[in-house]
Amino acid sequence: MNRLKNKVAIVTGGASGIGEQIVDLFSQEGAIVIAADINKSALEKVSQKDNVTGMQLNVVSDQEWAIFSKEIKDKFGRIDILVNNAGISSEKTFKDITLDDWQKMLAINGFGPFAGIKHVAPFMAEQKQGSIVNISSYTAQIGQGFNHYSASKGAVRALSKAAATQFGRSGVRINALFPGIIETPMTHSLTQHQDLLNQLIQATPLQRLGKPEDIAQAALFLASDESSYITGAEIIIDGGFSAQ
Image (tube, rainbow, N blue to C red; front, side, top):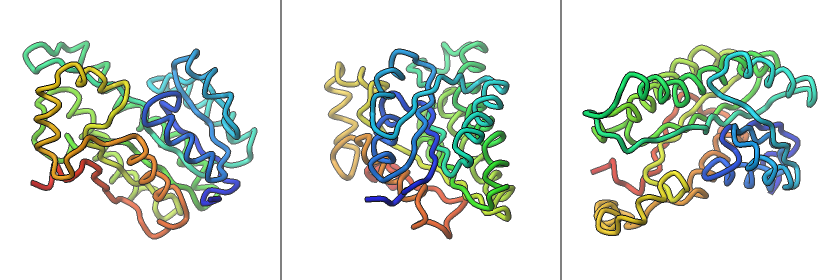
């Protein structure tokens, strides 16, 4: 407990799924958590939790990021942690993906984390310390999915390394997590295709799907001072799927 005591943490997409699990764990570990999400009704629920403030944010808006980050800094005096978790997925195959599909996916999954780093990292640099955790995907590590989702998560991977070198000398650490298939509302449709679900589990060395807490625990480590000499790193959390 208290691994994040008195730290101010922002978690995008913090009102559901992996993001909500990260919000819960960070608050349990003593952080003041701002759960940022575009879903207003979900934010009302998450805002009722101890040490959690829900704030609406459209991560594709550069202007909203500028206002949001300054408001957090002015209110709490600092920003110690940012988890860029907000994202979308799609089951469209490459034959059906349009330019509009591509631009929406890259805007949310790619520009969202970029804008978060752009506006939050400079505040952290002023403090000479801070931790940013970007949520990518195992599809950015292996040849899994010729589609706009994989492209967007590949962008997160590249941005994480570039930002780590950009801000490291200012004391800001930037790392990335690469989840496999995690049991969240985003992947709920898999439960309706039992044969496919069984195939995925059989293809995974640890013989199960991931849980949101698997990602949250890794995010906690990277957000905490326990990882003070780690930046530009990649942690794959996929049950061993991509190791084959």
